Length: 340
Ligand code: PMP
Image (tube, rainbow, N blue to C red; front, side, top):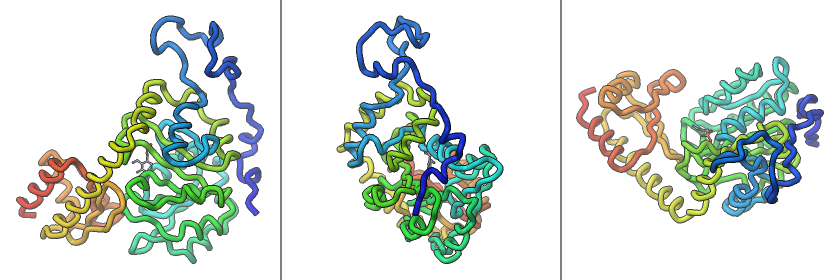
């Protein structure tokens, strides 16, 4: 049986969170002389620490209850908070499958938490038997699974097997899941140890706004809210997010364009002599294997096109984000004209 209280760090369980004098007056009118704000101006007041209006909006878009939503300063904040809530520095561990998103490692290192890295197989899928065996270590409190995975672009199979076989918290990072029809969100209620991360930085096109979400049981979300800085979402970002989430049509249109550009790019790249393989992608980027990644990377850079060289983790692989049709065309033309 999963018992949340045995996973949470004792100091976090015991924590008395910061409370402002205004908490009980949230959303009400009054003369507020409690928070040392300047009474003049437009942006003079602290933002709503509960982010109620935005949570209602996200709840509608993703068909989930507001009490199951945490809003962070990017999903990077949620990644950091997960480690801080569940892993005792210098003692507990986290685990992930590589190659994957680099922030899990950086965030673990900042928090002095050992991150175990198990390689994905040649198809970038989890080798279930060895993964389950590795999860037996009772010091592992958090498991990160990124699906669709960055940088490989594929969705990960067998996530539910992992959730069922792990006594700690499974964080499924769905930063790119808006580009697919696959999400575990519908199954959130089935798994008390599941946390799903999403972001407005990718399909929603709001990376500058820094707004990420964690979805989980009310008990887990209460812990996130206990630990987060009280005013972690600025009023400007809050408003921009609410406006964007109201434009579902625009969201669907942009998504459709990016997905068709991705497929067009994949096909065109496959035909280039420098390209050995284009990995199938469910996200807004493509992982390609080339004859010489360092040379292609430098050549593109000389031509003012910046891609991500992943050669160190995946030999001769480059990750290319899908750009505008014009940007993609320029990239293809420059590669077509190269003698590399
Ligand atoms: N998760 C994954 C898999 C990502 O690739 C990224 C951004 N590159 C993030 C999370 C961070 O997203 P945010 O902008 O919401 O912090």
